[in-house]
Length: 449
Image (cartoon, rainbow, N blue to C red; front, top):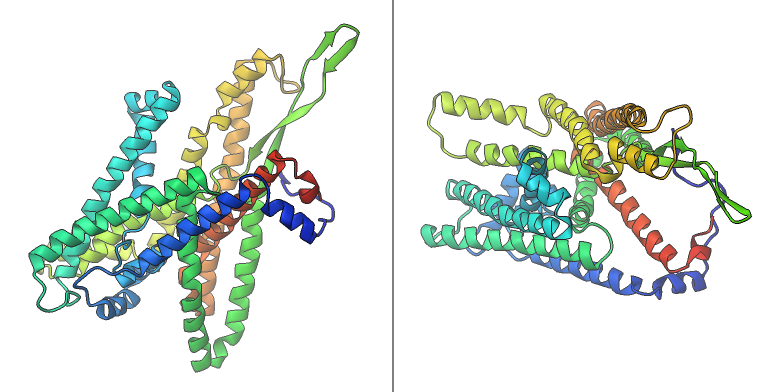
């Protein structure tokens, strides 16, 4: 394995370099557009639903681990019960389900692989419609929970409040989905990932304040905090290595003679990333786990009659509690499974197609026959590489959680491995996209290392 980071001393950019980057064709507009959309999203978070006792619900969310975890990924929108309380969650969940269905259902697989751009647009439309259905369902559950608490302001008509709130939350989720797609299409970076990224970043001051208060009340935890922050820092380094590490497969290209000159014959390589899915397996795993956690948390807080139903809900709540050992075991297994799944659907990770293309152009892997033997060899390489990447990603996800437990600094659990991986992964993806944009416009001098 080799890390995909260039060696050598990086040249410090000058003011002229920075101005050149800013004025690069299209980059300035993309950055301004992305920033503007994120600002609009943050403003929407502070627009609460009518008829809600926000103070009461904010206290309830701070005392409930699952609601607090959900609030982190909504950027505080859930705690404020804003119009964006559902956030990007329904859209991400819908995307996961549709990608899984595209593997199982032949008609959807045909749209994705055989019908070209028109088929992919149609599949995207199905994803959007299903996301709105999921948003409406989650809004109904959420409002059902609110109806069983004292969070509704006295004197408000419950029926009208329920209907208007479900419609508002569904429309808010659709608006967030639209904003994320606009960022992806017209801005820089992946819109959904950036919205989650901004939500996590916005929660850091609150976690820092809580940690400071904890240390002030118990100075013996100061050393534990230093240890925890050191582990967090080392974890971020491991995440960068995981994101950038590649496995090179040497390819021998045939020689071609044109007139008196000979072309080709130079060895190249195919770079297979150790972590092909990047940050997506983590986001997918969190989204899948948060869906039952949300429903169980809301149902569990309702006035259920005593009996087996209440017992089952309590057991499931313990299983999907973000601070429990069972939750992290399921989380680890899901990361591993989703990393393999994501690798299996990526176009540049298909052994048979790669082998066919190599055979078509006369290229080969040294010591391996073209065609089926090459496909089998590539399949073994990809399986081993993906396994190492999946296990590494899963282990990294557990380290900060275990460190928080050992050091007894529980106030930073919300920005544990999940948030760290998402933040670092999104930041790396954003930097890589900016670099690609600059390189495409001949700004190699600025990026020279």
